[in-house]
Image 1 (cartoon, rainbow, N blue to C red):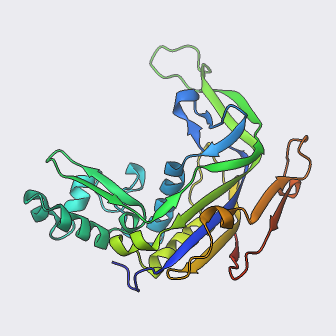
Image 2 (cartoon, rainbow, N blue to C red):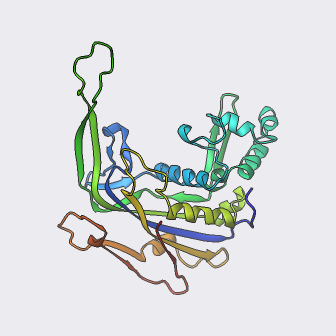
Image 3 (cartoon, rainbow, N blue to C red):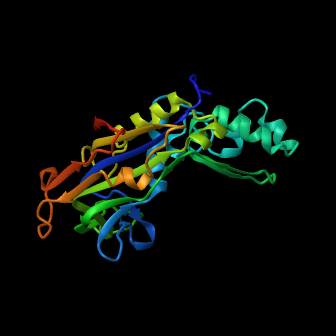
Length: 285
């Protein structure tokens, strides 16, 4: 486990992300178009955001249980082997000792301490761990405009192919949008998983730099950025305000609601203070 005392504060956070000519989170059931509600507002799923946080924690050198197969750093491509690499877990699995499995997994893996995990394996190991870090779907400010373009291949796939520019599919991108990521860290659950103050600091830095090393064809370099991160902390014995009251202090609006936004200056960010609770305001990476 990371050094440092177990977290004893209630934390809320709100990150403001910009998207420019990129697909922040494609929907595989809708041709990989950026996800939208029926009113044309956009959203990013919590699973997608957690994946990016895990990737950043990996970049920091932290030990992560749920890794992308193309980002593995331990030559293991499955959860079973990764769990068994922790001393004591293999024996605990044989004994069906779920209490020990949970304790050792939380001690070993920072993402388990943060997000928890559902571990269901072929040997009938079945463990559910509830994590203290929760994240809401990131919602766009206003509606989003999506550009869709056909893409083609420029080479033949098989011997004897004559035509080399067949249509392959579609690429979709949000022209410009602002998305708001909200979440919290529960100190009671932090006590159960052993999430430390140091771990919480890692989450903060991962959010600030969320899109570093996240470049892809759908998200070209510089097309997605965190421009601001708000971070609130309340003492575990002095929690004065609910999550909603805290999040409602930040208002992000379109300056001209009837005009499609083209840049950051088309949005305004205002903050209303709560007595006795001021956020730490952090500029994005």
